[in-house]
Amino acid sequence: MSRRWIRLVTAALFGCVVLGPDPARAHEFALESVMNAFVEVTPNEAHLVIRVPLHLLAAVKFPAIGRELDLANMAPATQRALAGVARDITIEENGRLLVPSIAIGRPSLPSDRSYERYDSAVAHVAAPVAAGTGIYYDQGYFDAHLTYPITSASSEFTIRTTAAPELKDYVKLSIRYLTPGAEGRAMVITSRSGAVAVNPTWISAARGFVYLGIAHILSGADHLLFLLCLVIPLRNLREILIIITGFTIAHSVTLIGATFNLGPQGAWFPPFVETMIAVSIIYMALENIVGVDLRRRLVLTGLFGLVHGFGFSYGLREELQFAGSHLLVSLLAFNIGIELGQVLVLAVMLPALALFRRYLLTGRVGMIILSAIVAHTAWHWMLERADVLWKVNWPRLDAAAVALLAAWVAGLLLAAGAVGFIARRMRFAGRFGRPPLDGGLPERR
Image 1 (cartoon, one colour):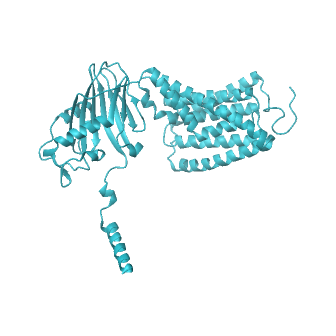
Image 2: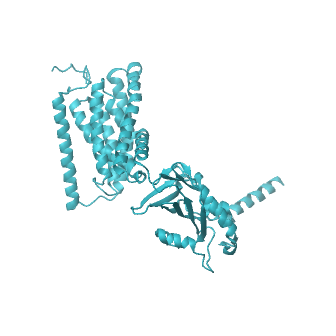
Image 3: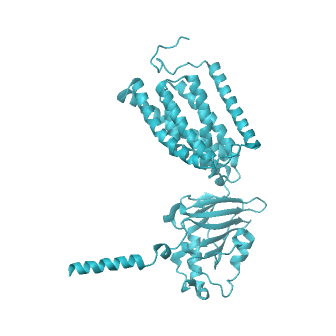
């Protein structure tokens, strides 16, 4: 009897799996969902006109007949949906939470295109649903127009979304911010973005981008390893300042240039930059092993710094949507944040290196082993990134591409010449430290 029951239970479970509803259909929704919204500020009111996929409002329990919405009995569910939208999408004026004084909403077909413009979206939300319209409860939209009384149109307004926080970045809120007499701006946020200013002041924009720059350098493992390779052979503060200053100036140049689209464009360039960053780490690690010349390292640090600047720009490009009208201020603040992050990293890295050289592996042996470990890590990064680079389409060398390439080559040569001239004028030592890292006698000067 026990075996028979086991067989019956097994057959029942198998039938549930094979014949039961497809899980993907039972919870049918796009992996990435986008809520489209307009935010308009007038002298006395702020308006939020938003379109939310119905599957994000599953907790509202819209009435349905079969799989279609019961449009004749939508009023109670519409009020619950409006309350949910007001709760999940919040707007603040100078830190004060705004409460909507007017809220209207309606379901819409997935084929509706009224949200391409603000005026048509407002008119669509105010219009009743046409008789005979069939809207599936798991495929349509819920459109809403919320009106908030405000104190002044010149206030700083922030917006936050907490819709479906368990889905994290898969649920996005696309915002188009409109003000009278000014060009609109667009941004995309998620529940993890927190409160985002749609019209930030220059102070708040600068503060936010300083924090962003610090976070970017602290979370960039490849940039941290490059810094480690730079300082492994250094023995005094003067040498450290020389090399780090060269790296800072170089990456600042390309960071600013790339932000204003002065760098090469195309799908090939980002993986090329990432591959070259890995190459820069490998080269610096190998140079630490075979011996380091100060002048050569200063020049190469500047050249590799230009490459790392492009890498920094890719981390910045997606965030510039939050700069508002303060693009240059935000750019400079981001660069300051990177430099502050480097200072924090070096404040930890240099004492750790000193302890490592003193108590674990002394002399050149410790530097060689540590550099070899870094080179091994960067080697795997280079292979992975080169594989991605190999699969992208490379640009054709037309006249415009050749001119851009020539300009960047000339710029690189000019930068290398300037760094070399500075090195000669400052009379830098040929080798780092005393005694030299290759084990020879100190040079006479």
